[in-house]
Length: 304
Picture (tube, rainbow, N blue to C red):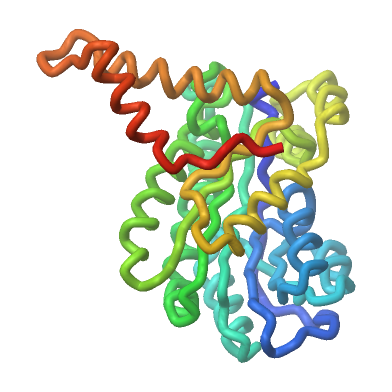
């Protein structure tokens, strides 16, 4: 079920009058895209419950009203594919006079088809939401985040590391987020901004149902399998860690079972072997183990 990987919905941007709760001026403000359902909703609820002021992006009026009713949440109509909507959200956040400590790029969509069978329109849509969206959001809100020496957290996927048939456009978009996150981490470090990518496995979200509605490519069995997936509470916890830890990791893999963890790590090892083999500068086993031992120095212990 690796291909049923979580992401939240596309979103849209004009400020909406909403219940901001009893937000204190000392609260750190976080903007979450794709906040209406799934991972984005869990992130919003967790951060708001733990004292953050959350600007929660969503598209539908019913979702905006529901988000706005949560204490410490300000709902924002936000479509990450529209530059004018991002500008409106930027104005809304700026007028809030709280600054912005964190940006969580969660909005995304999934598509289920081999790459060459994916229509140009569907391919473009996946890239506009999953790649251009985070780029545009980070570019627009970077000045505010730099001013607060804050954080950017991108929601990637283990699909950006694994290679499976049937969802190539989605996997391409999530692989792009790997480079986007690592590059931004280097480029923004001198300004005091820390960047992380949270890479979930298969968790429950509305992404499967949304894909069926949009393209009809998934089956009823996919919906049945989706219903059995674990709620993405652990993903929301990892996002909070990336926003709050003094020394956050660049990459947080969050998976619901040992099989997905093994498959993801194994895929990385296989790539290393493929890069190393049959070229003039191939390293032997001893040299590779020495590199691994060096990389493991200071690595965090196994979590409970």
